[in-house]
Every structure is written in structure tokens, then in C-alpha cells.
Length: 86
Image (cartoon, rainbow, N blue to C red; front, side, top):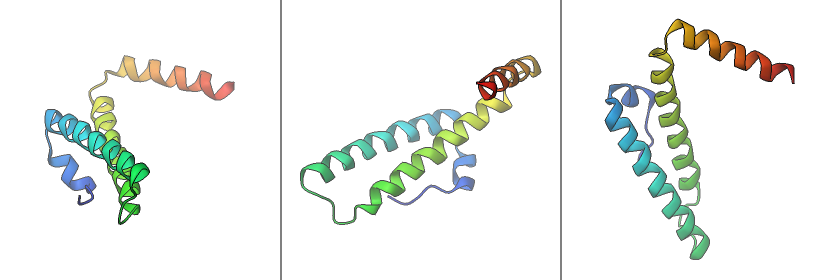
């Protein structure tokens, strides 16, 4: 599996991005299982998969944040501030 670059992810639609995330997570879980049972030729592939999943999740969250209203963003900021105080 080739790593997903930031620019490639921006070109995908929301539904394609979700499908890509689900597919990547399934592939990651299968690779982890295979590695535990018999080992992989290159175990660093697991790390690359995990990083690809994180890139996709970041893009999904960035899109969610861009669609939030100013009121939702303000509420989010208050929640984050409370968490910092603890």
C-alpha cells in the first residue's frame, strides 16, 4: 500500500474519504493479526498504515471543523479551555 499524501486526500470527496478510512482500518487490523500469527516480511508497513489512517482522520476532522458554525466553534473553545484547567 502506498502512503496517502495530504494533497491526495484533499481531492477526495467526503464519502470517498470515509470509505478510504474504513478500508485502511480493515487492512491495518488484518496486517496486525497476520504479523502476530506468522510475522510480516516488513513490519514497518504497519507503522505506515497507522500513519495513513491518522492522515485520513485528520482530513475528516478538518472538514468537520470547516463546516462548524461560529457558535459551535465558540462552544468547542470553552470545552477545550475547561480541559486545560484540570
